[in-house]
Image (cartoon, rainbow, N blue to C red):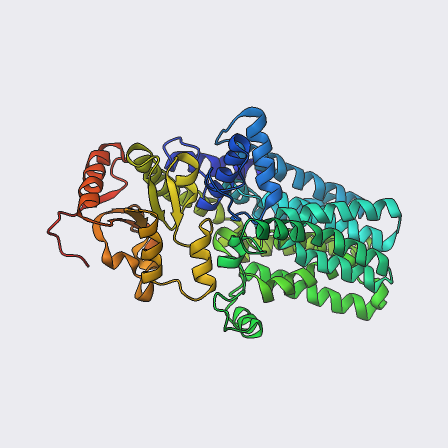
Length: 521
C-alpha cells in the first residue's frame, strides 16, 4: 500500500507538470533508450544508428530495453513498465528474504517500508534507468552469498555466481557488492567459492571492456570514464591523489551515513558478543560495499548512485538487529521489545532523512518537468528543422532518442573524439572547434556555463537565443543557449527559434531570440 500510494502521487505529479506526456526524470534514461532503439532497429550498439558508442554502463538494462523494443516496438512506456515490475519484484524479494530469516509482523513491514522510502523505489522507477534492476539483483545476490556461507551447496553457489554476473551487468557498482560477497566466502574459509564468485562477477565487465576496445573505445564505459568515478581526466594525476580527493569531497547523504554507522556499530556488537563466527554475512557485505563506494564512486543526482546501498543497508541492518536481539527477548519487561524498537528506529530514520524518504517523490516529478520543458522541446525543435543534420549538444539522450540528428556529444559520452580529448587533457576550445569544423557542425545547443575558460568554444560562435525553463531553482541547467557557427547558420537558426515559439508550453519557457546586432555576453 505504501508503494502504491507513493507511486500514485509521483505519477500524478509527473503527468501534471509534463501536460500528460510520459517523461523520465533524467536525460541519461534516453541514452539507454536510444542505444536500445538502434540495436533493435539497426543492429548497432550506439547512440547514433551509424556508429558504435560505449555510452552505457548497464549492458543488461540496455539489452532488456532492446529486446522489448524488438518484440513490441519502440515505445516510451517500456522503461516505466519494466521498472514498475522490477520495483514490485524488489518488495516481494525482501519479503521472501525476511521470511527465510524468520522476520515477520511489524519488523517486516518496517524494513520493507524503509527500503521503499529510502532507496527510494518510486523515484527510481520514474528516473527510467536500471536502478530498480540493480537493487533487485544486489539484494538477491548478497542474500544468496550470505546463505551459501552458512549452508554451502554447489547448486546454491552456481546460482549465486549467475546472479553476480547479472548484478555487475546491471551496474558496475555491483563490483563493490561482489567484493563483500568474496570477503564473506574467504572469511568462512571457502576460498574456491570466493574465487568462483569473483570470476563470475568480473566476467561481464571484462567482456564488455574487450568489446569496447575492439571498437576503438576505452575499456570502461564512457559514462564511468567521464563522470561517475574518481578516474582522473588527466594522465598526469595519480589514482591515489584522486582517491583521497574523492573521499574528502564525497559529501555522502545523511541517510547513507546513518546506515553505515549503524552497521559498523552492529558489527562491533556482534563480534564482541559472539566472535567472528557470529557476525551476520549480510552486514559484512553491506559495509564492504559501502566503504568501497565511498572511496571509489560518487553520490549522485536524484539519489540514484547509492540507491542499491540504501536498500541493502536497511535489509542487512534489519536482519542483523533481529538476529542479535530476538523479538522474545524483550517481552519480560514493560519496555519496548527489540522488534518494536526496530519499528521506532525506522520511523526516526524516515523523518531524519525526509529529504530522501519523503521529498524525493516531489523532486523527481519536478525534474521530469524540467526534462519536458527543456530537453523534449529542444528535441522537437531539432526534429522539425535539423532532423538529419549535425548538431553539438552537452545533453544528448532525448535528442538522440526522438530525432535523427547527427549528435556530437561535447561531454564525450557518445563521441569518441571528445572523450579522447578529455582523457588526454586537451578538452579545450581550439580542439573542440576543430572537431566541429571537420564535421561541418553549424548549430550548438548547450548550457553556456558548462563551457567557460579554456573550454569556451562558443565564444567564436554567434549567440542566437536562449530558453529559460527553470529560473526558480537557480541552477545553470535552467537556461539552454543556442549558438550558430556563422552568419548564414545564425539566420536559419534564428528563424527556426521564432517559428517554434508557438509550439512551446505556454508561460513555462522564457524565450529570448537575439537580433544580429545584439552584443554578445
